[in-house]
Length: 371
Figure 1: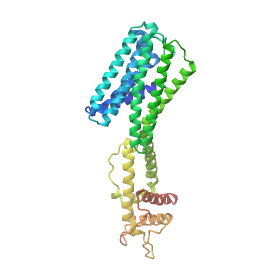
Figure 2: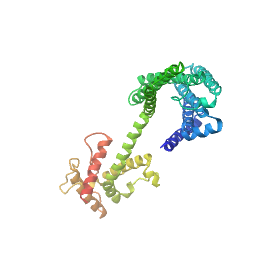
Figure 3: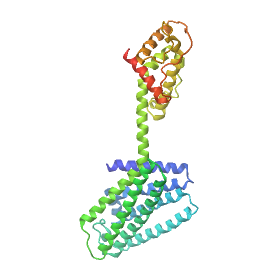
Figure 4: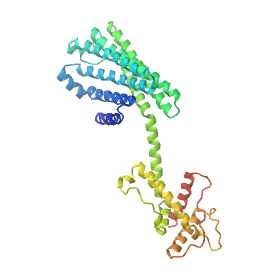
């Protein structure tokens, strides 16, 4: 599972770097790319294999230090995204000021980490000896900056959520709550550091509860930033499936009409197999089939007038219209000329494209059942 997640993160990082390469001067795009790059690099460092390998080469605690520095850069670039997205005159100046702050915090926690023995720096947050001032400062300094940056990003996200409409507002509110919850978790962990530094103890149940809170808030944040895109993708997939199905359901009517009027068949943009499955190809083939069916119905309509000369074909049920279409196709194959002018066929009562397609499908289904 971790390998699959690493591949997903790597794909997201590569995609964002590609977008950045195409818009190198776009500051928000650059900020998102660097944010994802920092987060993506921190993930393999935090994995057991990555931690063991780095600590074996550079000493215990080095992987932890690298991971925390990357997390600081992640939230810094997240803040820069909001600053540049606002496009305020002071955005660049504020970003430089934030860069100075994160640089100072980074240098401070690095100095704190390198001034203690590697053995004392080993372990996790729950097992570290917080009575050592450097270790307490390392965790408190990184945690407080994360709290500040995540809280600011959450506040800006909530501001955008209030100005947005659904479904974008829903995703933004989820993101804002997730960021706020992460900031709260970081604040609580800073309190734990202070308690343990002063010689007190924190129950393992509380530490585990905050860790669970942090994981849940991260999941909520990820769900929020992907909500709008996921919902749009689900809607697009449902439309893709429906149009593929309707394309197949129109086949009997389309086949009958193109057999007698092959010149109505439009030239496809591509005959490659991949074009039959990708979204653009499916939508193009769907609309082309509707046009071909309508053109064929216009051409065949003069042959549908019955022996009594009744030309009111709009009131015909799909089954009766299908029967007349078969007889008309046989007449055309025999070379008989058109007996009259074109008349409307299978016109829906509602004036919209979906109703038109439903009417065509009803006739096509009737042709399939009477085959």
